[in-house]
Length: 265
Image (cartoon, rainbow, N blue to C red; front, side, top):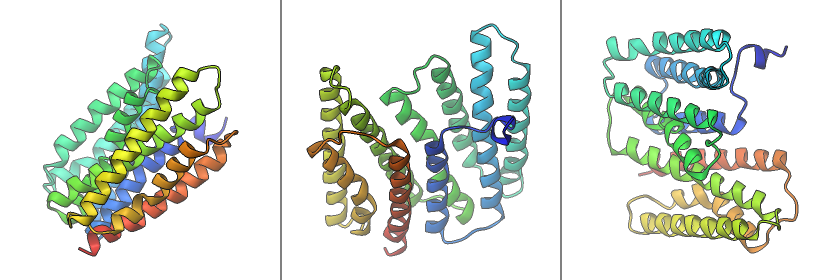
């Protein structure tokens, strides 16, 4: 048995990026790495890993199978998350992490329920998961600085908008290949146009009105460009590995220029 399977680690590579890229953005914008940030990293990692066992537990219950192994791993990882996170509240007094943690737990449980029902791959289900995973951005910023301000909210919103782009883009790529479902293909095309059109206009307004600087346009430019290119010239084939590598590169660009957006204010 592979170590990955033995430890019940999540299989979705994109979800790891959605967890850690916002976390790193939060740290870089805060401009420091300290003990609370390291504890938070440990806590959110164990909590994220616990999701896989939670899903296995829910699936076993629905199939009326013994859930003992899944329940054991879920208890271990959730316990490690609690041990790592407790000092943040009781020693460092970062009390705002409590509602963030409770919100993350709720979204984690809800997403696992959706996955057990095979509803997690819907557009709404994926956006909801992104909303929960990207909470690491404001949480990391808060843990590193020890105080909350409007920047934390901006980081969360921008991370949600960025990773939601991939939901519409990937669905567009996949459905563009299925000519037998023309109505679904057109619906996906329209949704992608509306989302990225609204996103581009909103970012331009934020940049040119001075709410954010021009670096924010650079942060989103790769995902906007790849989406509009696909809309204009749909690819005849899809290489999921290549798409994954490119999305990772785009995420690094987003990380760099989002950091500059707030560090250069």
